[in-house]
Image (cartoon, rainbow, N blue to C red; front, side, top):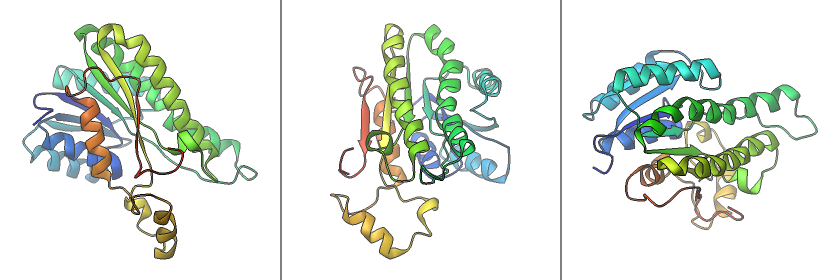
Length: 248
């Protein structure tokens, strides 16, 4: 198990890609602290699922896009787990609209959650990683942040911002052996895509060289690689997990 004995914080881990990352990390021997806006049945179910895999796991109620909430979340995790080796910034939302109809609220909300949460969590964990002299931060971007997309100017801006933020932090943190990388998923099949009509799904998949959507676990495996000791000389990298989508 390549993450044996390590501890990770994973944001947005109660569903979708974040949940797959949490499961994959636990299977690789990693203790997992994760969060959601409220402590509810879904969080408790994930906690039990991870614990059953033989690792220590705990869910926390936190708004990671809020500076003080993120600070308090990390303090609680450090108190409970002792140290944190890995941070996976996965929390994110969409509010799609054509630019001519996009409201200021839609733009601010998406950028505020997707990009500011990465700042807040990175800021909160930096002192602990700096003190211990190692760490791996993996930020979940998107191929949309590389190539753009129709009706997603706000989402593309937030994900492009994550790339610039990550590359800057990678340079700053390298002196203390803290690596910062980005995983950029393409079209991934999650609960959010379950209601897409088959005809539309087929059209989208026809544009992907591998001719299918990705799975959450395929994204999770890329995160395992970047978070692990298998790549101690890799930092400031954007890794597309997209089946060869154009412009990724």
